[in-house]
Image 1 (cartoon, rainbow, N blue to C red):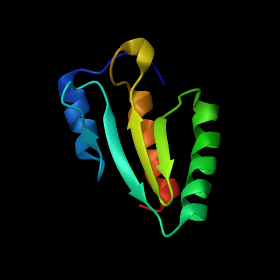
Image 2 (cartoon, one colour; image 1 turned 180 degrees about the horizontal axis):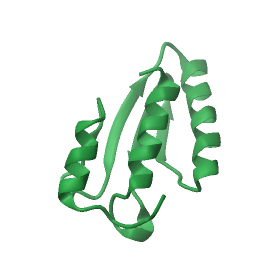
Image 3 (cartoon, one colour; image 1 turned 60 degrees about the vertical axis):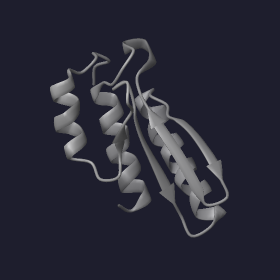
Image 4 (spheres, rainbow, N blue to C red; image 1 turned 90 degrees about the horizontal axis):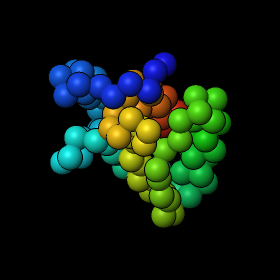
Length: 98
């Protein structure tokens, strides 16, 4: 997967295939909030995601409060969104069971 910045059209097409993800106003990132039953489930999601992200060498910006995980994805060195962001979003959705 490349770290080439996607066009607005490509971002719109890929975003249409994801549920629950939103494009930032500046068009440079996507975000989603994941809610779980409890802290243990939220933390397990983060651990499984961390392993997938490390294999991709592509890491999320995220925070966790109790059972909620807020995620923002972008590719810093491309100053925007790349295919990596959408691939990680799909993996996160699968890990969360969505």
